[in-house]
Image 1 (cartoon, rainbow, N blue to C red):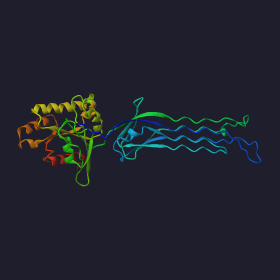
Image 2: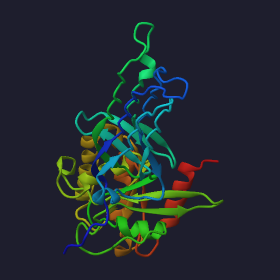
Image 3: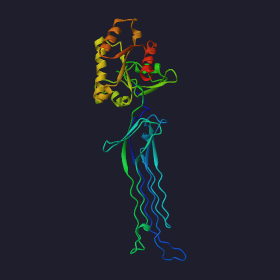
Image 4: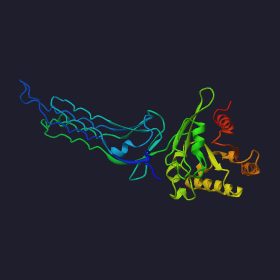
Length: 338
């Protein structure tokens, strides 16, 4: 089964700052000064390329249709010492959380993580000097002026890394999308086949006293994801900025040792992608307990094993809502300690 992906988190664009305007060669021609001195004005400066983050965008889809951006050139100078008009800057708006790289060198040029944050990526070329600047006692009628300096052109790679407080991770069909829909106002696509989630879904969880947390459901990871297998490798970067991870496990997997092995697989993929990411705080969510009797031994054994490994674990049913209040309280305590 397939469906279109209305999401884009990588884009290549070409940007160019404006060229500087050329200087002017001109001489005064006034009524009583037929052989007046040089009065050629300077050329205007070229426009800059500015990149600005905005919350109005949530993906890089606009760059699928527009890939070239160019600032305005400076205008040439004029007689009577008139400086040419500067070229207009071009402002390229990107979603909050966008990193900008020089595609040729790989250098990080910007990391825009706040609404309204901007940076001048490429400065426009300087305008050339008019002939008025080249007059000397021995050269009173210079017939030279500078050309404007050219602008700079670069190919940029844009990479969107969503900003979320909490990232939901786990194997496909562990119930992350259902959990997100129960904890937040998000309504992701939910189905029974693997890789239902094809794009990161975000939702806002409301807590007491007008407190909110942003949760991101990351498409399921599988073994080898950090090397490009499955879908999760494309979206691992979206949890780089999260402060805490909710690792969702499916209690219906058998045996219990197999669940712990799956838990280790996801953690290993995180470590391969980024050792720092693997060290991020994690809370384990044992999901789908509605399929077992209350107090089932499998649940207690799994919680005990995870506790021994140093992980706090909560048994929940995202489908029925059982145990979700404890998750909310744990998150509120982590993010908003008294």
